[in-house]
Amino acid sequence: MGSRLFGVTEINSNRTDTRDRLRATLRWVVRLVIISIVGCWLFFYLDSIYQRRRAEALFSDLKALNFATAGFPEVRDIMVRYGGGGLQPKLEPRLPDLGDPMIDEHGNVTYPYRLPYSERSCTPQNCTFLLQIMTALPRIPILDRTAQFLYTSLPYIGVRSWIATAFIRVRNGKLVSSQAGVLEFRMERFDSSEHRYLVPLGYWVETRLDPTDFYACRNQPYRVNISHPRGKFPADTLDTCLLQSAGAPTKRAFDVNLSCLDNPFRNCRFDELAPLAWADYSAKNGDTGTGDPHK
Image 1 (cartoon, rainbow, N blue to C red):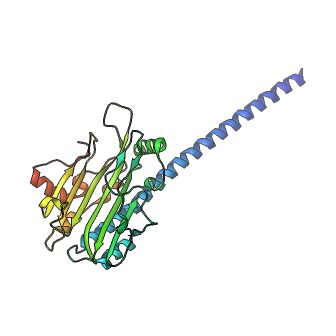
Image 2 (cartoon, rainbow, N blue to C red; image 1 turned 60 degrees about the horizontal axis):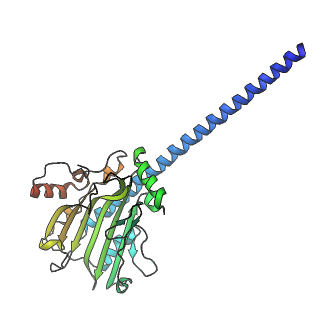
């Protein structure tokens, strides 16, 4: 009788030990998952702060640049300082490229614009510079369902994805045109279907030296407007265009505040991102709102 009781007790003890080990393993796994999630979130957030500070320094340099007289040396120094450079035939940019993005029904983004072959070289007389500062997620080559899942889900835990770009052309040794801005990428649904689309929203500045250029601000020396994407995309960009003259309000155009990019749970409003450009737009168009792209 005693041996039977001892056997039952031993079996129960073994079962208890197994359950305890299982609980300990589950607790360890849960802790590891939580630590991994927190660690990844912290990495994305700290990387965003670091890239944001680089982008702010870039816009500060562009704000101080004399676009009316700038040439190859000034542009090259800024580009090299922040990791950009002249485009070469074997060094063409990867995603994202410049031009209007084309988005298919799966959320894949392509940028069809490519430089003519004659512009794919860089000399002190003629050079096309490209600089991109971006958060971690756009640096990862992901497409299709993986991209749709990450760009849709990560904003809910405060991970935001954005890119700051500067695209500058030098011809005959002079700065003849530039495009610079900061765009946040989000997955948006604009109809009743289940498909979501990768949509940029943010602030964009374009400058032109030649006032007779067809694209030169629609014959206006300084122009601020809201660009509405084609179709029914629910996101906009605030666009500023100015001629590169001695009296151009360059400092107003490049006065940006990127600290709102650090807010993990809310998009930047136009009045936060580009306060002076938004003030000029509001004064001209009678808009007294805050410039929320989703309102």
